[in-house]
Every structure is written in structure tokens, then in C-alpha cells.
Image (cartoon, rainbow, N blue to C red; front, side, top):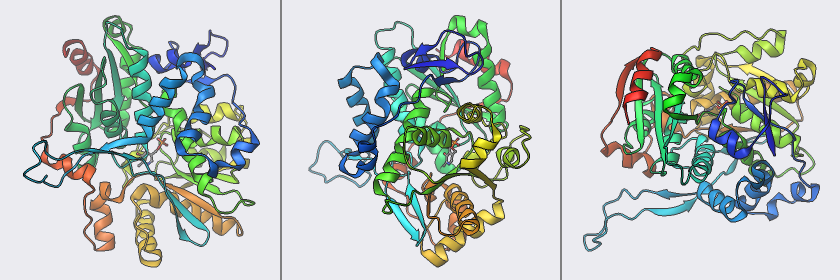
Length: 457
Ligand SMILES: *Cc1c(COP(=O)(O)O)cnc(C)c1O
């Protein structure tokens, strides 16, 4: 499979390895696959007969092409879908080795919430958010591709909350890869901050005095800085990277694998910020996965809902909301969605509806899901659920699922007052609370980032 730059379709296309290492094309366009693989009907109709690993392999293999040997891709998929769970209970005294981490499979259960609405839970991984799968897959691909290089690669990434933790966890201790994460000071939850700042080793967290858009802008400037590129081998781990973006298709196949209504494809609601996840879902659909309709579930950051209604695409400053991982005013993957539909708004509108949900509505949705259905959603999932409910009200007879993208405990400040219950920390997070926060504070100025990158090694 080859990938072309969305800024210039005629430029030389590159393979998966090159697209992964570079992140973005030299002309700063996003890479897009030249063809969309079509999967055999027999596979799509019998997903329940395949393991998650087999599904992942079949879905991603056409995209990686011959850049990864078969056994290597199998290993990468195994490591993506299985992870080490740290042990937190004190070990028995006679056990001299201390608490033992154990490997467990990443689970993606589809849970029924109401008769026509289900939740696909994507938060059962090491950092409790859906970005784990993409980050783990990408880190291992990159680790393989740079093996034997004498120059380390620096992965530079801006996070609005969850990307950073997933990238830190996914890349931790990967040989030959340094990771620098920019996050907006005071604008991520305390659990998210722990996940960003407690790794150490090859992971550095920069705490930026600004918004997520400031962080993203600084990262973009670094990629555009030829002077910096001469000294450093830089790449990104944001969802613009094909190795992070494309494996997110797995969720949609895992959803259909568990979907009980064979003759009735689901409406799928995707809590969206940078639109990588939704765009991955659309790739899965193009490959033959049956989906009735997609919902882009947005918070107050409503660039895409407004575009779908008016045809006017107007990026804005990001507004802070309860669902902070979706606080994006200029979604980077939307150009890929436009590419899928040849920039034709009417074709996009046939398959996609977008809603903007306020913080107050988000709180109400969390409350109502809990009170009436005993389902505890995090703010992102709640936005997804409410957007889906709106669509289902307007389209009676349809059934749908929303992606629950984060564990509610990551947002306990919002969730606990709504339910009145204390949440218990899962093992993966509890282990972090004993560690010390390590971050470097920085103004939202590119020159400071540049000085840091040139000096930190
Ligand atoms: C990143 C994130 C999103 C948004 O995903 P995009 O691919 O950026 O649209 C939604 N929910 C959570 C919890 C996230 O971390």
C-alpha cells in the first residue's frame, strides 16, 4: 500500500514505513492510502468466528504491505491487544520478587444500555482510554522501523489529555525512541496528568502555560522548522500518523463482531475531537463493514456540526469543556474525511450527522444514564450517548451504539458529584499515585520548545 500527501496528490507516494517514520509529508500534508482495501464478505459476515487478533491482522495487513514481515506484524498485534497489568496489592512476604505484573488481553465489551442503545467500551487498556490501541500499535511499528538506526527518533506530541498518557505508556522503554509530550497546564484531569508525568526514562512531559491549540501549534511549528530537522529526527504520534490512525478501525470490527442484530446495522456515535477515530470508522465502512449511519458527537467545539449544517468550515479557538480530550477548534483529521467524500458535502451528509452537546447537557446525560439505566458514562461517552439518543429520536426504528472512549474514573471530578458515589481507582491508575510527577514548565512560545529540543539530549 502506498500513501500520498493530501497537499499534493501528484507527489511521490510513500510506503507504510516511510509514512510512519515521517508522520506528515514533507509538504506538511497528511498521508492518505492510495486504495481502500475491500474485505471479503465471508470475513465480514463471520466476524464472530475470528479472534480479535485475527480480525486486527486481516484489517491492517493490506495497509502495512511488505514493510512488516508476517511474524513481526503478528507480534505487534499481540502486544497491542495484550498488556501488562501492574500489581498493586502488597505481595506476600515470602514472595521475594514483589508484586508480579501479569499480561492480560485488552477487552472491548459491547454493553446494552437501553433496548436500542449500547456502549462499546474502549477503556479497558493500560491508560483507560481508547487511544491505547493506536499508540501501542504505532510505538511497536516505529520501534521496528528504526531498529539499527544510529540516530534516535524523537516523537513529539501535543495532547489535550488522553493522547499523551497513551503515547507515554505505549512508547515507554521502546529502544531508540525519545518521547516529548506537550500538555496544557491545568487543563487535563489529575489522573491524566499522572499518566503523562510519572514515566520518566525516555518520556519527557512539557507542561505548557496555554491551551491545547497552543500545544498543537508549537508542535506544528517544530515540524515545519528545517533548522530543527537538521539536528533532530522528529516524528509525531498524533492521530495524523497513519500507524496510530488506521488501527483504530479495529474497534468498529470488534463492535460488529458483538452486534446482535444481523439484519440491522448499527448507527455508530463517535465522541470526536481531532476526528481520527471517526475517520478510521469510515475507512472500516469503506472496506465493507455494515454501518447504518455515523454520528460525530462533539462538545461545544462545534466546527464540524456547523459545517455539516451550513457548508461553512470555520476553525476556531478551542473552548474548554468537561470532555477535554475533544476540545479541538481545528480538527486535524477532518481533511481525511473530506478526501473520502471527494470534498462533496451532500455525500458526506448522507452518512454523517453531527451534534454539539453543551457541558450542562453532558452532566444531565451522565445523571440520566446512571439514574435510569445504571450505566456510568464518562463525559466523552456521555456526549456520544446523548448525540446518539437525539439521532434515534429523529429516526425511530434504528438501533445504535456509542463508543465509550474513557473510563469514568479519569473524570471523577465530574462523575462523582453527579452519581453521589465514590469511584475506585483501577489497578492501572492506582499504581501511578505512588509515583512522583515530573514535568518541565514552559511558556506557549515556539522558541522555548526549540531551545529545549536542541539541548535536552
Ligand atoms: C482523543 C479522545 C477523543 C477524540 O478522538 P479523536 O480521534 O481525536 O476524534 C474522544 N474521547 C476521548 C476520551 C479521547 O481521549
